[in-house]
Length: 245
Length: 194
Image 1 (cartoon, rainbow over the protein chains, first blue to last red):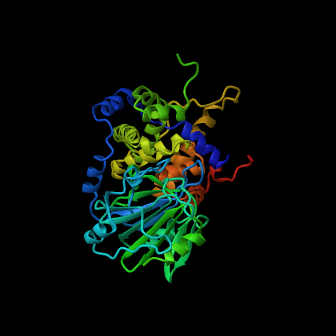
Image 2: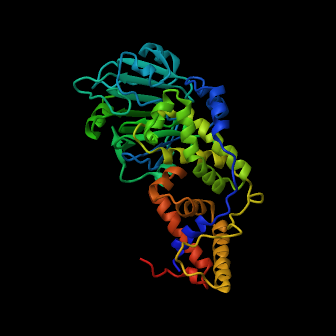
Image 3: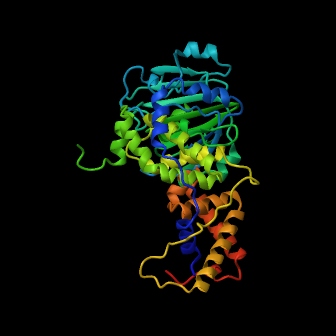
């Protein structure tokens, strides 16, 4: 007798209890409290305000195949946004709109800007991320094609946080995640559109925080982690990363 | 009147636009699967009902972030798996998986086994299931999702939130352990089927 075939047969014969019909109770709950995007954050962040860890889940086209890359402090925002209109960062839920000077006054770490791209089109400050995250958003332009997931030309995230190398090495899918050096600092390149989500303090996957990310370069300088998300090649992204000042 | 049942993508589209009736249909379509998954994870019927309902509510509230065109089933499974994990019974309170009392799975045309053979077969299966219950959590869940839920490797990986390679190695380690546990039994053989 074949073990696997027998397991399938056991599955068909399992004693699974009857369950109530969920249609009416789920309908009632949804109708009583319809989804509101902004409020959704409050309980998540207050409940899990300590030691938030993030996991990047790499997905191949069509099917979500998980491959975790643990990085503490990675911000989760909401996408995808099909087109970028002025102030598109609002639709991506990147936090409060600010300016470079305003952001610099609000975080403890130095905010760097890539010389290769010049001043960002939009700047956001997100205090929901432990340590506060700053996002520089560049609109699509001749040298920055519109990225599939975000609709932006390029997003540069800067926040205080460290890589969790042990988790990354345990879960990373070598085919999609590549170790790189960014201006002498170790980093990682994740090729292609993938999902990003938080793990909570217990290490549990937090599906509500799922969102799509374009190809991303992730590296750390001192206590600050940088993450560039765009539709650009690794080579071009590395050039931009090396031009941070 | 609809001429045909709507597919998942159409239902998602309508539900995301506020059509609660469309979401009712999604719940109707997937409630059995989500409850079963939640039961496998949590080990209790009450916990599974709670997890499945919560998963449907959370999924609805996250619909605007569901990637259009991607499959709905693994996404829902991932949400319910997480909900069920959060409600998992402690090991001492967990109900081990068991076979239905009156098992009637034989396909028409199969030769009916003698009562003795049937009893022996059932005994073997109960022993195998007990061995599955005893597996470590990672291997047990990978085996349960692959064989008891009938998910493929990619769906199992997605639902459990691990890499596909991790599912492959957990299933293979789990099967090896089951073969070891059942060393003396016929079930331990590799089998002759292709």
